Image (spheres, one colour):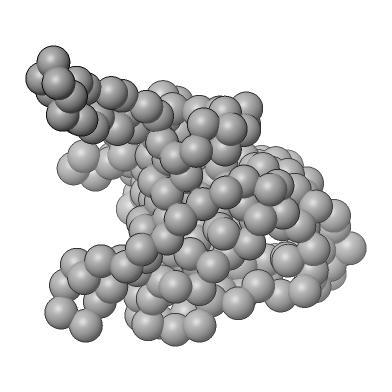
Length: 261
């Protein structure tokens, strides 16, 4: 009987494109064993129950709410769920290579939500942080075909409850995905000439109004003032831009978000 870690590692390596023979050699198992794990013919009912018990929707597991809402924010901004085979999916979060700390924080959040192996796939300019499971669609029911802005994004009651109880990590996840903290520079003409002022502010931009609404709802929960405007980015696609610029509001955001790193 092999441990769950070894079984999950074979799924991870398969998602990376390794052959069954290479996976068997690296993990010290037989090709027949890993094929049985993949197709489910060797697992006993008890073994399968152990693998699915961590899901809070179709099993008996309990989510780490703070880690979950942070991951939810990342998923709504830069994530998607893809299919491998036999009901096994992978969650992928695209993280810009400019911010290695965010990549690490994302990699730490995934196993806090589900006890699965986490791996990274390098792309041009970004890194996809991934984890495989049969139950990503259970806890991210917002998945679907097409871009997120083309379909309704509405949280389930249990998701909204988690966000309302932990708005800070949810906002942090959204800002880490589709937001930023910048120094805004303005100038003002005076009798002595032009004077320049700098002040920090937060921006969030997403083409889904529903996702934008989720952010401002969480900001309202914390009493953080915000402004929103709409910009036309592409034909038939608007960007909903939320900004936080008042000094007290920025200071409150700095307590749990801060600059990307």
